[in-house]
Image (cartoon, rainbow, N blue to C red):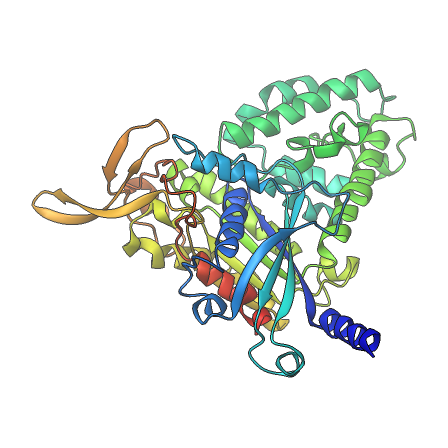
Length: 464
């Protein structure tokens, strides 16, 4: 009788174990590592010291607690939560190391079912939460799956102007007389693809641009040094389609096309098939402040990157991801990060600006029945609100410590509520500064702004 009882209990417990896979995505420098570190930290403290008033399961005592458990995907590197916490708790505190490869972590969340069949079977249930993190640069490779090598080359050629052309000068000089129909030379290809990679690094690091393709060229991960990352776009538009289609198999063009096709099929497509086919929820992090601070070129580049990305993230019948596999994503949260780097009165403008940036994608998601929301948040709070006197007027301000160690009380300026026009760039006084994290006790959860609102949207219904 006891054996039968134990077997029944095991079956019941197995039925109460639920799984959810959350993909944390976003463009470069949006704060993915900080967000995941904070999200884990808040959940680990949920059983003893919850500071999540907007997260209903924690506020009402349904969430009993959380703990880290071994992840299911053993071939994927583990997200280094301990390293992130160590950096944040150091003296002086510093930001966690940014994402450079795919990683994963699993949390076990124990909760009391609110109602329904789970509540009738047992007092407690378990949700296993898998959080997947990967570099924002890899996101930008998804549109390649709908472009041929010639089409992708034309796209790259169209953006080679202004600052980008300056940064690509050495590469452009060396390929200006290149004969794409001549026999391929491996040493030449390696050299020229290296120059193209340097150009992409300069776009990202020196100019603050987001649109860099292929993304694996700047963050190769396990493909570092592999020939699949040694190709570059055709810059010349003088070659006709018929000439290219009849190019010899051993020609430079044919080899470039072959490597591009291989990259799309075995690097980009395989990655998304593995990591997105089982995703339930998705959060897309966007840093709008740094591009606003950098100027119109950086902001418009970020906007273009988002638009191209959102065209790929269409989950309806005509969407690219739907054609590759059938993702089960039913909710997407867009988050404007680093809300603590502007005064609280500017937070609504942050959300409004983000809504403008993703307007088309939002319409598409609504049509396909996918729930979508926007929020402004600070994963790990680095400033406190204050006031400053200016010409006899009291203005809202931020108080914090810059990454240089200098204490600062400042008003960073107004965030435009809509896409900025020419007048904004001519008179804009927005000043975005990089603050270090605020120090805090190791036994308390990290300070944040609206992480609980994000948790409510992403997890709230799963813990009922």
